[in-house]
Amino acid sequence: MTPSARPGPVPPARPVTRTHRLVVLVSGGGSNLAALLEAHTDPGYGARVVGVVSDRPGVAALDRAREAGVPTAVVALRDFPDRAAWDRGLTEAVAVFAPDTVVAAGFMKLVGAAFLDRFGGRTVNTHPALLPSFPGAHGVRDALAYGVKVSGCSVIVVDEGVDAGPIIAQEAVPVADDDDEQSLHERIKVVERRLLVDVVGRIARDGLRVEGRHVRLG
Image 1 (tube, rainbow, N blue to C red):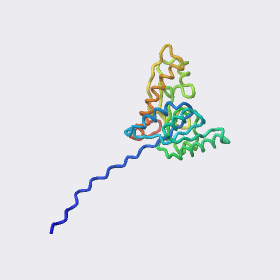
Image 2: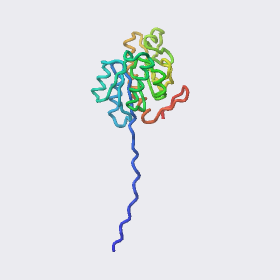
Image 3: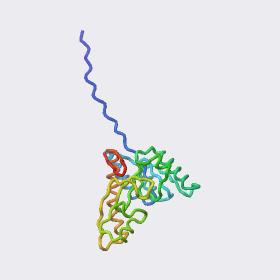
Image 4: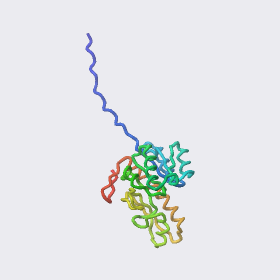
C-alpha cells in the first residue's frame, strides 16, 4: 500500500491592502481635483477619490468628477435654513462615501462643529501662502501688498479657524519683481497641486498623526 502524501507547508496569506478612500470638497473649476483624479489611476498611489461634494451646483469640478466616473453631491447653503443645518447636511453627504480622508480642494466655505466632530483630524486643505502669514481668501494679494520676496503654499489639517490648522507641508515660491496677483497665483497653483497630491498619497500609504500643532506622516 502506498502511503498517502503528506501536505506541504501552507503559504502565508497575502495581506489585503485596502485602498484609502478620499472625498474631495469643491467650489469651482477643480484643478486640484483633476490632479488627484490623475494620481489615483496609479495603483501604487494608495488612495482613490470615491466622492466629490460641492457647495455650488453647475461648477466645472462636478463635470470633471462625472467624466472620471466619480459620484457627486451638491450641498448648497441656500437650501438650508441656517449655517448649522447646512453643516449637518454637508457632514451627512460626505459620510455617505465613508471617507478615510477628506480633501478641501478650492472649497470656499468654512466647515462647522458637526463636520469637525465627524471628520476632524482627517480633513486637509491647501492655502496659497506660507501660513501662518496671510490667511483668508486673499492670501496671494495680501502677500504681494506686504512686499514679500518669497511666498508659496501650505497644506494643513482643517480646524475651526480660518487657515489656522496644524501645518502638514509647505513649499516656497519666489516672488518676481513684475508679479501681479494673477501671475504669482498661477505659479503657486502649479506647486500647490503637486504638493497636495504628494501629501495625500503619503497620508494614504503611511498615515497621519496630529499632536497639538505638530503633524507627522508615517
